[in-house]
Image 1 (cartoon, rainbow, N blue to C red):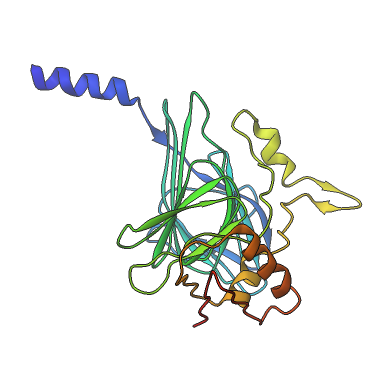
Image 2 (spheres, rainbow, N blue to C red):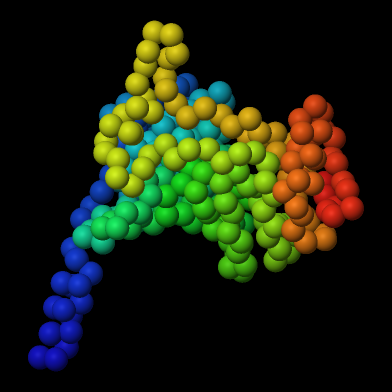
Length: 267
């Protein structure tokens, strides 16, 4: 009887959860999906896909997926798997595995009544957030706004803020975040409704799709400038020093700038 009461109370406190699906909202080029145990099929706008589905984009192909109030933009030559989609009285939980390629996400923040948990796991690192915008390729992370925890496979982690870049380094290291651009404004807000998501896909004759504008210094340029493995030897630099480096590096994306307070190694 005591065990029965304990289980009943636990269920009431946790609240029921129910199956959720992700929905393709935008498709450009060759995009395919594979449900568990099934063959690869062409993706279609409006198609709902359940947990366990793998999604793949071809050369020069992209897709946007709406997931529990958040939106994931899947870049070319990328493969992801939807590991978990859950919603209950406490909020939502999303877990994705990034097998290859790169994604950009706009995650609905937590509110006073609903908590958002959102994570993307790569081969060597995991990005975990509760409402932000970021770009991630499994090793390198650029946060557009909000805050993201970047952790490696040994759970060594750093908190990366809006406008900052970090990367998993050699062995068990995670690089200190470097400011590379001003933080952007939150696109999907905690109190906003479906109209904020719809705004990402609206078209006008003059501007076309209103997708999030690529940041002045995006993840690709940061990696080209600083190398695929960014390691800080001398601790956290000052914002002024890094800003000056970024301005200089923008003139030549292959130039790596070093000064007295920081040493950047390109591998």
